Image (cartoon, rainbow, N blue to C red; front, top):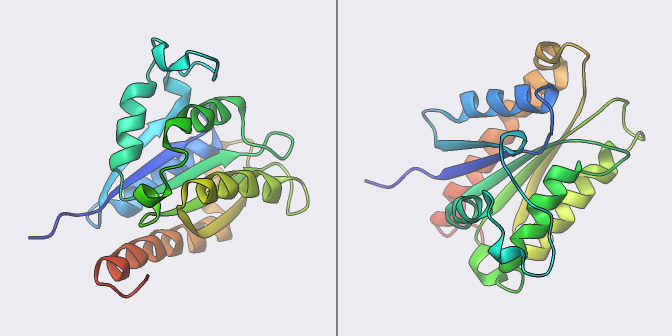
Length: 187
């Protein structure tokens, strides 16, 4: 029996709000189809990158192992002035141990959900592009990018037409790519 793919969902928000709501919905959509693992960076101790950061006493060693062994990734990030928040940037910077190892990640896929306060043109595209560039640097193939408008009441974001339609599609596309790659259909 073939092992189900492990999908690492990284919620890059420092707050319990829209990004966490969307991340939990993605877990729900993946259950029964894959093994979803949700990492809420708001609950993790991640020191910023600095010389000797590999000796830092924080949560990164466990997170690096989860990242290394995942089949695919979904990063959910609010846009802070068109960029990922500091906690997500710290996480990205601390995965520097994987730079130069693109062959280990070139068989992996990722998707991005970028959440902002204003429609396209308000910085959510740049936020997603920052994350997509990170995946590219590791050799990870980005499949889908979903843009959502944050809501004052986080539970309302899941009622948005784009969330209702695009999040299940994002999950299906990610799982289909993993399946096709494992069968030799994607090179």
